[in-house]
Length: 269
Ligand code: SF4
Image (cartoon, rainbow, N blue to C red; front, top):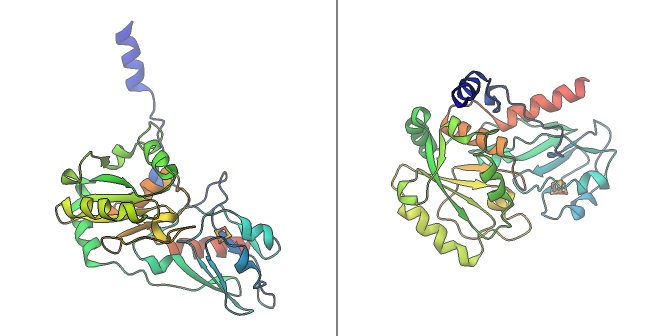
């Protein structure tokens, strides 16, 4: 009987996610807030005070800047200004360029931004595009929620290894260090040691809003400027794997282009 069960298992269609068909939004998530106001209206400056991470700056009646690298996707700003902002469900918040996550909206439309890709990222891509990469995770003073999502990224639904991304026990065997949390004083040295132990070429990945900006806390000292910034508190497993694929160059993605397309499509509705 066992042999028949094995044959059924082989023939059964795979149930894991198809990352080629991944949407940038998730209907079950709040996602980042986006403006809904148009020309002639404006967002009240008082909204800046409700954001726990200082992620919103109302520059003028026309312009508001969101730092999505500091955004916890908590929805407080939307509760404060429901007629000017909305939870978008947009969760694919990642870039190799930190400044790409700081978005200026003029009259509710995101301004354009050319993503800058460092030589280190290009070199990392050249090596990992075909082979994938292995990472060592460093829990750097966070609340373990990002670690829970990283664990889930290896389950049968998300199947990180099918995207050629594996986890290893030692940074000696890793191509990347993925850290989560705001890197408190006690974790600065361990993170630096993990980084120094890895052979080059290598990448540093800030996984989650706290790792990108500190979130509710001051961000500690890092070994270097990260090569990939993944927003979300915590980011979903599918977002993490999509970001890894983008880092490797097996997925084409530009946060600013995708966000602009999303906002334009919303306005057209
Ligand atoms: S952290 Fe919360 S209040 Fe601040 S921008 Fe993000 S969703 Fe809005």
